Amino acid sequence: MSDSDHRPIVDEPLPLPQRWGEAELTRLTTMVGQSSLFYWKGPQTTALLEEFRRHYPLKHCFPCSSGSASLHIAVAALRLRPGDEVVVPPITDMGSLIGILYQQGVPVFADLDPRTYNLAPAAVRAAITPRTRAIMAVHLAGNPCDLAALSLIAREHHLALIEDCAQSWGARWQDQPVGTIGDFGCYSFNDFKHVSCGDGGMVGTNDDQRGNGLSRWGDKFYNRIVGGRDPEELAPNYRMSEPQAAVAAAQLTKLADIVARRRDAGDLLTSSLTGTLGVVPPFVAQGNTHSYWFYMLRLELAHFKATRDEVAAAFQAEGIACGAGYIPRPVYRYPVFRNHNFFGGAWPIRDAGYTSMDYRTVTCPVAEAILADCIVLRLNEAMHDDYIQKVARAVRTVAGRLLR
Ligand SMILES: Cc1ncc(COP(=O)(O)O)c(C=O)c1O
Image (tube, rainbow, N blue to C red; front, side, top):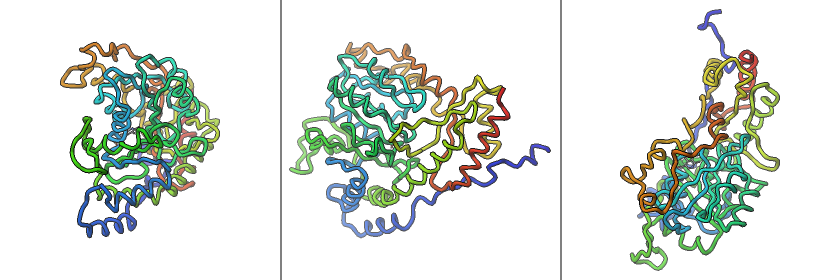
């Protein structure tokens, strides 16, 4: 049989969901009749907050312009001093780190759990210094972090726990929604997430002390309640406006269905792959719900006579929508960190002696290993069980063919 005759095991096009429709149109249609598109007391923003709190009952919430903005607001609300440290994972989006750096804080990278790809509590403990102020728990791909262990460490050391839920809409830790366990929950509505309004974010907290002024950290530190412009602090404009809020509010009415389908699809893939020699599905701790923003598995390369990239190419040849690897390298190896190039080629807090952090010397071996042997499979709510079974069959077949 020639290559052109090869019929892939996944022999149908990648199913894609219809993401926006009547619900969004209805809200947008109402919105165009409004006299203002400003967020403060805006009807779409009010609806968004209501929908959001149905899923995440957080007392103080602020809809903002992106997930990065939500994380920046949470960090700003901690009022870091220059050189204060935040423990972070090395596999994440830049959005987790931008706010820390802009607030003159220092991201300190701690290594990961090899099975969940989330922060390893022991590594977090080892990264704590007298300058540590917070831990940023990124629930990667939709798999909840070990929040029992991270909360305990945070309490013991009087640290804030920020949950980066950008990738984990609908995920649950011990049946509680992620983002409601730590001190802050931060969410993204960017185009690639479970729910989207193009770009947007949400930050929330149950802490009255930090929560009462939360919106000010994303609204030039203006006080909309008493009015007037007399800011006591420096804060950017990260507001979300009514058009985004309209779409985001409508999207959240679909979240439960989207997540239920993704969870079932991801869990089915894992149960179908369990026991396949050389293939390690993601580990979900007992009692947690993974919401599968993507499906990342690892290969035990010692079992294969092919490289990771060759295995990924063979998966693709069988019709699997996947990519070799995730981010190209751990974040601390990005040129911006390697060169300490944060502000015009310099890092003022380091130059002024507030930190001696040197990112050129950082290594997290588990994160490096994960990025060297992982494969990311696309997963979405339009994939029916039959399709997932074909994906699983294709993975098992390719693995069997390429084993030593
Ligand atoms: C883990 C994580 N944190 C933060 C962000 C930033 O979100 P946004 O793109 O909305 O700024 C992302 C976005 O990809 C993310 O995946």
